[in-house]
Image 1 (cartoon, rainbow, N blue to C red):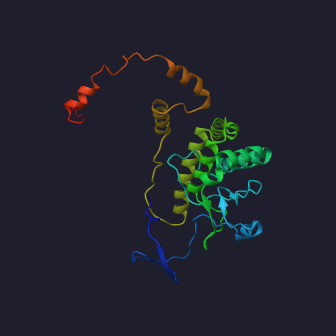
Image 2 (image 1 turned 120 degrees about the horizontal axis):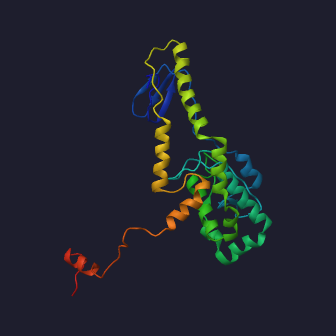
Image 3 (image 1 turned 135 degrees about the vertical axis):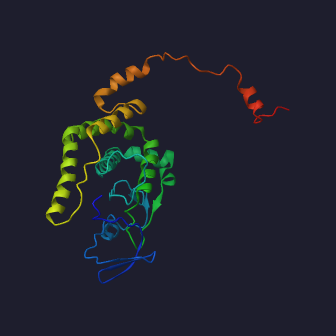
Length: 264
């Protein structure tokens, strides 16, 4: 908004003094600093310590007693409950402890379910060790294990409610909104002090806009707060004043009239 930053999407081909040469052929000149913010690579020493040839799911060689967890690479989701690794790390810890505390559960999964054949497998590459997998792999492992282990699912009951209450307690809307706006203004004030000339850009959101988003969410999705759940369920269970729409036997005729269904 102030013209101080340009957003460029491309791949870096090579570097020369103060210049980035992009795959598209473009050059970014007068570059003084490069910040690599593309995630992390795990330590190959963990693979060597455990003598890992292959990960079966999240376990070295399928051995649930040896648990290694590293923040998965990339993202694979359409709905984000959080931008931190906290929730996934907690779930992974609960899962690991469950099978250590109840080894008969893992024996059941191996002998009766054949879990080793259902889980994806991962080996090391030149770029990363075997125990570091991506988000898609991690989600497939979690879905597979959860689907055949109801006891483990039960241990995660209530976590979503706790997380929601935690967010609201730590980040009340009025305080969070004020911090966002203050930070927006602080950046502009600092740039002014550095001698950059530009017109002040007002914060693009208002509390009324945010409240409208919450109202729309309540109408189309469900409750925003845990405390709203009971009243929302009660209202949802009330019979609708609108007449019930149901098939009165005309479906076959409709399909026939539109040439989709042909009766010999």
